[in-house]
Length: 310
Image (tube, rainbow, N blue to C red):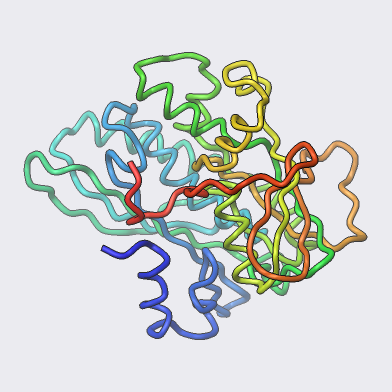
């Protein structure tokens, strides 16, 4: 089957040109009683979470990944719709609901409705959630507005969740903070509200810093240079700070930090978590510059469904 990008291109002709944003963004924007921001994600067992993950963390994560898209647009959560495949395991379903309930209560995104289906015995679980938010700034920033001269900022380090996944796959339970980063991502709602109004372009980093920066560059018809890959102390203790370790972190998914293209005059306020990671330049494509040297881009920049990844 063709990759994710190929399928999106097929769908673009079917999308509403205004509200669907030509399928170049993570949200749809509808104007009704103010501006609404909508996004949806599906999580499948064995793809987005491991079969052995605690169901509470799965419930949290399906809310968090949608909240992250709202956060990238500076939107205030209003509510969500949940489509859920009943597992036949009442304890699992109840634990999932507890985790989901914790997330929607914490971030003020009540469940408004949805749908449930029954799965055939032995089928893997699949869960979808659609989040609805209220825009807090106009225009709602998209991926398409980056300009040459803009500076790229991210709200935190990358690679923790990817490392956590690999630890779990290897049967390890430590470092716990890396595993927590994979299972319970924290949507950057406050940072989105604070910085999206100043951004020329913004998105969340869900599939990897490199592939998502490339997507912003493509959507904005510019080139992006990544010259810094921030990693946490825990990840550095596990993997080191070599160029190879930083490139691996930049290709890992599930970080759910926010990536902003800010105008050149923007100065991060004291105490903010924003980290400068690169700049927008004339041209097209993505360039990686680490330790003053241009790096060969890896063949896989991040996660893309249908691209033959394990």
